[in-house]
Image (cartoon, rainbow, N blue to C red; front, side, top):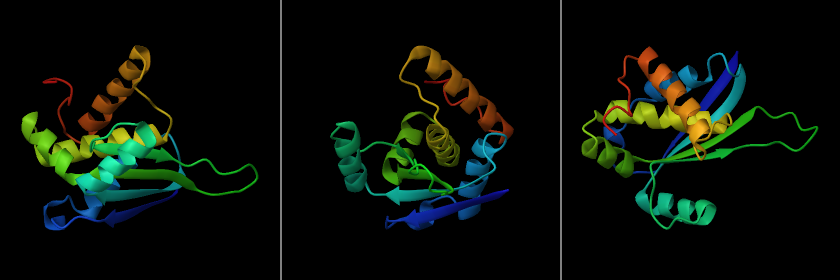
Length: 152
């Protein structure tokens, strides 16, 4: 197994963020049994950067919690890059407070959610959402974290 997580932090309040080991554990939990090797870049962004990316790639002019950018190598180019996640620390913290969740539990959920997107899971259609949410609940339970959709 050869997996690598590149953590990039572009926010001022980095002391309030989870530890790199936590990010590693959350990504590994999502990848286990699904993919043996690859690299994921997690970039912790400001609301401004999140809004710019969300507007450019999704047509939504507001910051969001996590954006996923799966990587597809050109045919014949062997690259182990799975993709990139852009996670807005301010949005994650605000949502945790609004949803009465611990910030750490919500961070874990957002990292797992984004990683599953990189693996091709989606939640646009109801049946896809059911599959993805059930998997998120299962993976978070492995980490001792309650169902994030219970109070939603």
